[in-house]
Image (cartoon, rainbow over all chains, first blue to last red; front, side, top):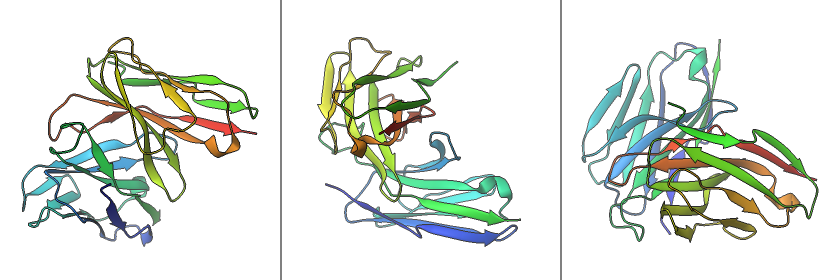
Length: 115
Length: 113
């Protein structure tokens, strides 16, 4: 099946630093999504990307849909303690066997922010 | 608007016991799914449903059963719990269509001893 390679697996950063993480795939996706999971909670959607080359921001978060449609990155600027959590990328393939429902998830980037 | 509600939040089972993890959504979503999350493994799909009466297996279905008698509910049954099923379980739901994303519940932390 499809696989997403998400890196880095974990990061320790100082408060105020910028953060960058990315996902790459061996196959094309039509939609890229980025989720954040707070400790003890379920993942919550941060940003959705629909077109190759698209750059979308949500506050201090910026994500891009790669031109090849096989990758995406997420940047967090000026990190704060509440940015701590696990960030997941997900790709949606409209041509999957289950139609337009299925998401493929990366394994996550665990972010720790040192005050 | 409750979104996706999972119960219980925590559960301890003995090996061989059975139980049902409950999931309910009030958003009239057609698609519902169950994932398990283990350290370093990300989210792995157990079972999913594209509508009432329709279910299918995901990546790691062994040891789990599901049914979907209503749009709102999608329970996950552990038939005979094993220590390997110790995990955090998430239910998610969505409308069909590209870019909709999933709405996740807050999870059930299950320990099998």
